[in-house]
Image (cartoon, rainbow, N blue to C red):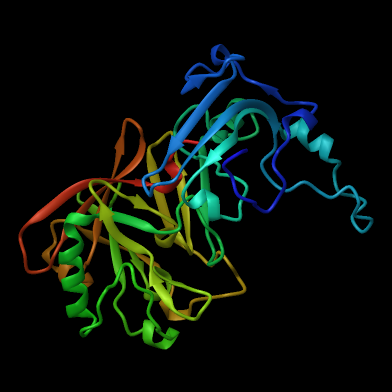
Length: 333
């Protein structure tokens, strides 16, 4: 990789694998371009600005940790080769030769797409019989992350959001680009940001309440920065900042996403300031009065995968604005 930074592990070397082979354009079927040797090249861009370019390789893959063959204290652990032969699946992976944006600075070696595209890992596991249903769940603790840590919404509603936030927060400004010094006790005095998802039955809705300790990200110097931004020309992304400390269940066949409060890291609880889920009715006026919603979203399905419609509603006003927002985990691999 000529345009990549260092990550947690050395680069993957195809020549050292006994089970890998480069995929031709005919074998993969929908390549971005074909190299001179007929190797398939793919690229992927993301809403927050990052991208990668990679050569496609067919490899035997296993989802989960492999036991160490040098661990004398665990003689009963299964052999890695047995795990791969029993639970591994042959899967097309992209060997990156270029990366930009957040991929340059992240510690992880790559990204695993979890969209409804048939070339992602979950459909392969289902077809091979390793999984019984086209369904998976995520549970991000404070140190967990998706492909995008932050969440992004349309810039057209940024000023309305900032004005309402300042009113509810007793004059505290919502600054997207500036780090501020706020102790945890000071953060707890700020309002929650609530995201409303349309339920599976007509007229129902579900509220995700995101506490300030979650929508602020701590920096190494002791300052904190907002991780919910209003910078998109259209659409947006729900990143890990809105999914942390929830069990998030993606039911790909039924086109549903479920949220349940969870302690994804048992060692660190958030006490009374954990995110929570509650139910309400779209048509019930008291629903808006009770929750004082800053940002609301409606869950729908789109032909390209799981998506979200964002409805921004400023209390006391009748104007509403709709746009599409994708869940970050639904990006293609």
